[in-house]
Structure formats: structure tokens, C-alpha cells
Amino acid sequence: MPGIVHPNMKLKEFEGKSLLNNFGITIPKSILISKEASLGEHLFFPCVVKAQTIHGKRGKAGFVKIAKTQNELKFFIEDFFSRTHCGEEIDEILLEEELDIAHEYYVSIIFDTGKRKPVVIFSSCGGIDIEEHQKNNSCFFIEYPVCPLKKLFPWQAREIVIRAGVRGKNIFKMEKILVNLFRCFGENDLKIAEINPLVETKDGRLIAADAKIMIDDDALFRHNFDFSPRKGFRKPTPLEYEISLIDKDDYHGVAGKTFLELDGDIAVLASGGGASLTSMDALLSYGGNPANYTEYSGNPSRDKVRRLTELTLSKPGIHGLWVVGGTANFTDIAETFQGFVDGLLVHCPSYPIVVRRAGPRMEEGFQILREAKEKYGLDIHMYDHRTPITLTAKIMVELAMQYKKKI
Image (cartoon, rainbow, N blue to C red; front, top):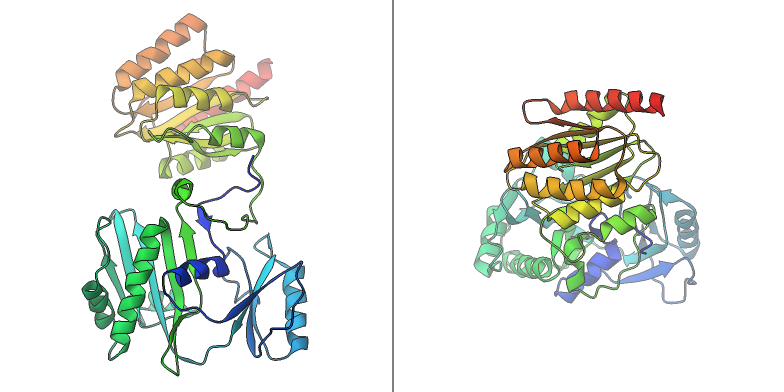
């Protein structure tokens, strides 16, 4: 059982820079210090002292300092190792050469789910206040979508940086960096590859002074990354871990990829997306206490839904089950409801079950529920798109409370 839950795989700065360096992008001279290791003798001053964390805003939290002497360095290291950032313990500190900065740029590649393709973002402004620059429109950001089946060509990279105002020899230097960053993005299955700032030094070098890298966790099986365990996230419960295996060898839809075990008594099988979050808010607003949060969507198989239902309902102390979602576009309601009934019959619960779903083969699906209700004496209450999700939350809470009074 893995020790850490990965919400996609965010890399620490030194890990991200190692990837960048593998693709020909220059990074600062550096030394990595761990809690267990001594400082050693090969230090350089002044140096930038950076706590390594997967959480942002570390600079504003006081985890980036400049040490000019051995005593200052020792003080900063002891201070960083004694504190946490956003609940995360600091296990590594990166010591880097202090760069003689002439200018700072911003460059990133993200996967835009709306456009369904990678987007290169470039600006002639960079640094710690980049969000403020975006809000105030004080800098010009170029957004350049790229076909995911193709590479970023040098002529495209030149077009991006020229449109952002880059001139002279830097055009060709930037072109090379963008092309190499796009290669790094694609070959490592990244969701985000950000360099902020990309520093131009006074002697004309372009250096990645920071790196924010996130790997798509669905693609980790294709790589042999040897990164340290993520920290700052709690260990999964045995039930969470077991349910996480449902999708492991079957990529037809999702069932249980997102599963959180909570301390309530109303089990929730949600359809995913924003409607699921709204559903949880509604349940809480009516006094309900969820036993879990999970999602199934994208037309999962009957067997995957059966396993998700069976495992979700194995939690002791459940007093109600809410199957909730909006109108599906691609999920076969009848197929998933059959899997749902298969899982129900493992437990044959006496507590109330409220179902609010709609979508393809909806009538066939509700007929499956009606037959199971009659044959096995299940307390199932069925609603389609004509009944608001929030109203079924109210009904679920009331029925669960009535049930608890009877037992």
C-alpha cells in the first residue's frame, strides 16, 4: 500500500530542474542539502537558500533567503528544517548561486482541457508577482495553442517571443528554450511545465531560476521516475487504497479514482464534476453527514460500478445511500445501474437509498431499480432530471434521520 496520496504528481523545484536540465535548459549551479546530510565543504557564497516544497508562495512565507556567510547559511537551514509550509515538513533545501539578473521572463506550457491541447504561455515579465501582472494587465502574455500530435516548431517559438517583444540574439536563445521545454512537456507526460522566472543574466545567459512541474499521474506507469515521496498529504485509508485499484487495469470510464473516506453516515456515489461538489454542499446544508465522497463517470463498466458500490457500502455505520448526478451525456445509465444493483445485493441494506440520475437509457435503468426494489425489498427512492439535486439532498437527509430513529 503506497504511503502517500498523489493529487497528480507535483515535483519539487530541484526535481523539476533535473528534468529541464535533461532537455538542454540551463539551471543554476546548486547543492542539495537534506536533513541527514552535513553541509560539506563545497559551498559558495553568496547563495540562495530555498526550502524544497510542493506548495506555492514559499518566498512570501520566508522560505527563500540569501546567505552571505557560513553562519547565516547554518541559521537559515536550521530554521527551515524546524518549520513546516502548508503542513508539509521540509526535508531538502536547495542552495543555488545568486544570479546577476538583468531581466526576468515567464514561460509555461499547460494542457488546456477546454482547447484539448497544450498551450504555450510567454511573457516578457516574470518573477514572484506574476499573478499581479496578470490581474493588472501590466504585462503582455502570449498564449499559443499547439497541436498535441505535433511538436513545437522553431518558427512557432520565434513567433511567440517576437510577439512578446523579445529582440536581437535573445529571439534564437528563447526559441531553443521553448522548443526544448515543449519536448520535455510531451515526453514526460506533463500537465504543467512552468519556468518563473526565466532569468537573463547581465552576461547574457538565460537560466531557469525556478521550476514548477506537474506530471499526469495517469501516465506514471509509462515512466521510471525516481522522485522522493510526496509529503503534506495524509496516508490513504485501507478502503481508499482498495477502491483506488478499481481503475488500475481498466480505463473505460472512472469508478473510485476520486474516493475520500469521511466520518459521516450517508454514503455518496456521485457522477463527478461541479454537480458533485454542489451535491455535497447541499447535503451538508440540510444537516447530512457524508460517509465518503466518490465519483463514477465516463461510462464505466458494470463490473467497475459493482465493485465501487460493494466497497463503499462495506463501511460500518451507514444510514443512507445517495446516488446523485446531473444528466449524463455518455454514461449508460442502465449499464451502471445494473452494476449498482449487483453491488447492493452483496449487502442488501435496509437503510434508505435515494437515486437522482438521468441520461442515456435512463428508463431502462430505472426499471432495473424498480425490479430490484420489489424483488429484494430495498428502500429505493428514484428521481430523474425533473427533480432538483438539492431537493433530493433534503429527502436523503430526512429519510436517513427517520431510519436512525427506528434502529
